[in-house]
Amino acid sequence: FVSHNMGSIAQLCNKGILMNFGSVKYSGDTTSCINAYLDNNVHSASYLSEDKPQTFIKETFLENTERKRGNNFTFNDDVIVKILVCYRKKITDLTLSIVVRDKQENPIFASHLAISAGSDSTLNLKIPSKFLVPGSYYIEPILHIPNVQFIDQLPNYLTLEIEDTGSSHSAYG
Image (cartoon, rainbow, N blue to C red; front, side, top):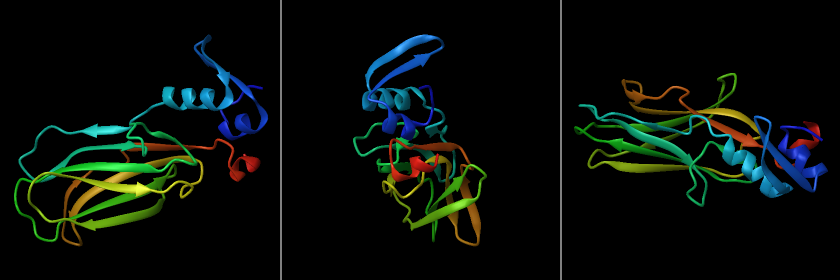
């Protein structure tokens, strides 16, 4: 059985082989093979900016609860979005918003956090397991003063892949 559908593989197979350009990269139990596939399939999972004279988003990345960075997660994984904001001057009513979009760029949900200017700080957003159905998503961090001014924005820069590894959704795949 050959497939990229992790849910079908998890349901139908008890052993797996991971191929990469015609070579065997992994051979063993299905769960470990799926994890090897997910670890091997990383796209734009982080962003790092040069220093700027104004307040800005310095770094953002995705990780799981074990602090492993990446952009491929299983349906059962919590996803942590980490954002480092660098403050260069006091800004009143500063807000950090995160917009999650589907692959057609339709907004799925947004989260907003009022932040107080001061020293550089890392902000965390947890997307709980099973919250997003398997598929492709974009994470868009926006630093702004609501209804007044955009300070910094990373449109569709981070990609997030939720892989189905045997949830009830895989029966419809």
